[in-house]
Image (cartoon, rainbow, N blue to C red):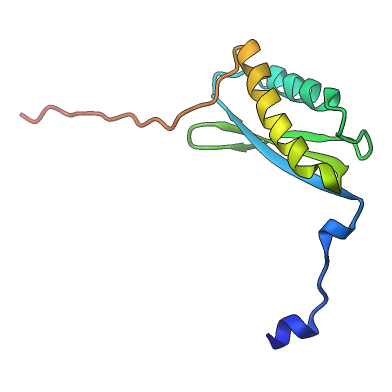
Length: 115
């Protein structure tokens, strides 16, 4: 308790704007330029997402079973969860419309015939 009572506490909900970080995984067969375009389109159409700072959309990771895109957008603090859930829904719809698939972990099993 001593550390907490002597430390500086930052109340992020006091600030007027907040960043919403989200990740989206796609299969290795996905066209990464198309994925980025679809994400940018969905984000730019959302009325609660701020234009400044400019939303961040990048391929962040080559995962075991997926390519992982990181997005960062800004909105009013009171809109954080609305933006988060709206974008989750709208990205799924847009991915479906563009034949972009969310991957499932896969494992290749090889059997060697013992003689």
